[in-house]
Image: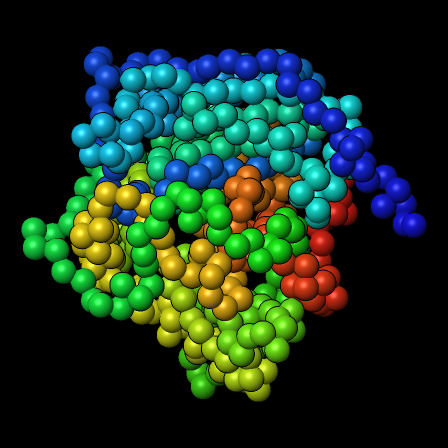
Length: 453
């Protein structure tokens, strides 16, 4: 057994104890409580929690209380600008749909401690490391932050948000603004809380949306087949590997994006994890942010707080994925994303939701009742190295989900905290896909060596 594995704390020995819970309210909230009606795209995204997790070296002050007090002080200030994040999300009895009540109920801060040092944390196998330990979820607070101190003096901060508040772009703006406030810098984002994405006066949409999206019940979500997809893993990918994949994917003088190239490679790896006696085809999906398209390329929606997401899907036979080159598959990826990455699609999707309200709505494929599917999302614009509250840059930043059931696999990419162009990839996988990635030369399980501890 390597020295690295000897130093890793077994899940049962990695114990985290909560020492204090407190509520932080905005300093200058709106005079009277008021409600914000969710947009149609907010309704599509649902109510599940989303967590962004950062690990830090021991602060120079070596005073955990001072560290937390400073976070609370700057949080109270930034909530003045992001007041929905201090509100409550409740069911409107007339519409049977959730809405945000801006009443300055506050954000929850959880303080916790562990006698495990950072160098003994298993950063690869997240199933035993995070859930109910350094990430906890309390449904009464749409915004909650758990700050955990390790025996070495290092710290982790887990930011957990209700998805109804917004998407990754919204949460990235909030965290970046909070850091600016903590460092007494001017805010680079003046948040837009208008939620103005409404249906057209005469809703209309392409029939293809009926094939890709559906109304569903909570029972269907709770009983979705898990397809053995439960392994939460964290990988490091070198910048040189990403550049090599982009070069392989960019044929005929047409340069593909890094996420298109990465997706093509993963799709090809994925087929080795599928039982071809049961499935002749498989799918890949991509979360698409519509801000640039809805803003018509003029950055008009860059500060919009809320959900502006759709999902694109591509389907291919295992045989054609086997025979195709990375460049061929990247073309399929590009075409699938292009069908969704335009203003017309988002206008149609908003109208489709309008025609199917009220109720829960999802992309059909994510219920896990079709062919094996992996959904990829890109967090390349999400702040990582910039998440500095005045105590230093993070060693690691990633996304995490505490949802107990998923019907498809997921991968989320973002720049690593190294600042060298490398990536951190968070994944939820089925066992055969985890095994394929374990033997892959590009995917490296995240360890303390990547964090330079």
